Length: 475
Ligand code: FAD
Image 1 (cartoon, rainbow, N blue to C red):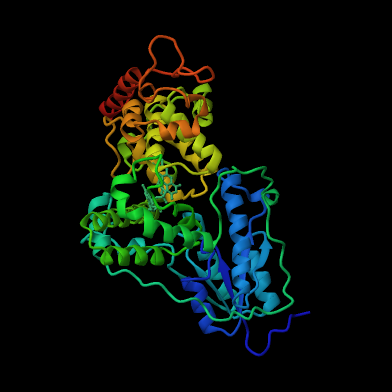
Image 2: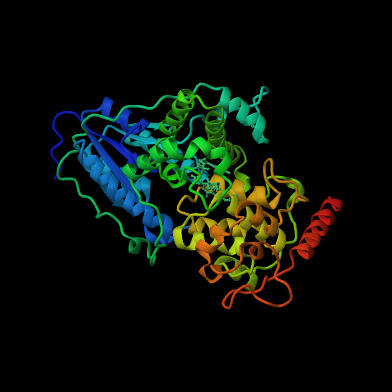
């Protein structure tokens, strides 16, 4: 039996990575164009788990969906959850509800785009409208091109162009959604839905309200000194909004606007400079999304063709030690343990551990990329691929291969008192700070239960230089 739809047909809003009601482009347009909206989320079946699906991100998704369901209730909406292939499930829902259209915000990832193309074809078969909106970025990849209309391959000219463009303004909250009654919904998911076990204990709170709280804290307390503190892993010096942007718990327009306004209102040149630096980080996010859009092959191979076919080593015991935070390099181990315990790692430390894997352990960046995707709550295909290819020296505007960070001096520069290291490696809590930033003398471990360094950085650096140089000569 068809549910009671009233007079006019409803419209489906398909939630994807926009799990919020405030400043949501497609949801607002859906609610303004039709008297009743069916807010829908389609869960993938566990048999469709990707090799990058991991418990931390899925746990955050579960909690964000729960919060979304609650938020929708405040505007007379009811979240309808279905499980399976998105096109088939949306088709079923169209049939059940007599919906006249499907609204959604576009996904920047290659797979998401394929699904959208298929959905557009199906909607015309079903005789209904299909509306996709740009919502994930301030500017689409095709809005930021060189004068000759080509994609940028280097960040600085990209960001100069990006910064010069007018930014879209945040949108209001939709009015009442009046979701039709009696529609069937699957229950809110738990981790077991994807056949996954426990997630990390230290994951940040999920949901739109928590994300808006983080934005408020960032703008009022963190970003004034972002320039000075963002490379200090022991401090709360960054916004911690990456998972919120990943799941669309807060919109990029709202983030940009709040920071832009705070910057305009500030009389302090250093605060204004810091907030500008922050905005440029938002441009990095869109730069990597543009790279993935124009060069989707980066998910398989090196962006820079010169570095395709490098001889990487087969991951063995040292790869396991890297994952578990027991390489004997305190700054590397602290980062990997932070990741294990919270599903997050500070950006500076991500760079250190990524360079360590590729340049000291000589392990393929794709192995690190995969492991990060399995663990990170903010796992974002474009930024993760960009970060890994940057560190490996193979990506767009990457670190040149001969600029190999030394984990000891990085540690000394960015965590001089060892506060970050000691937070994540309790075995080292009584070790004098200066000893944390140098290879231990002789064969004496730093602490009873802490391993000796698994390699000599100087030696491995020389090997890397030789490997890259030889590869270049063979081109
Ligand atoms: P802030 O410093 O407060 O920055 C604000 C926002 O800008 C971030 O939330 C993020 O959306 C964006 N941003 C900042 N730095 C970068 C960057 N280098 N590249 C792209 N966007 C950036 N970021 C992800 O969101 N998802 C990932 O999967 C991811 N993987 C990474 C892998 C490696 C190897 C490296 C080196 C970096 C990776 N980053 C990734 C980028 C960066 O580490 C995180 O965005 C940042 O640590 C998130 O913390 P924050 O929100 O406090 O950042």
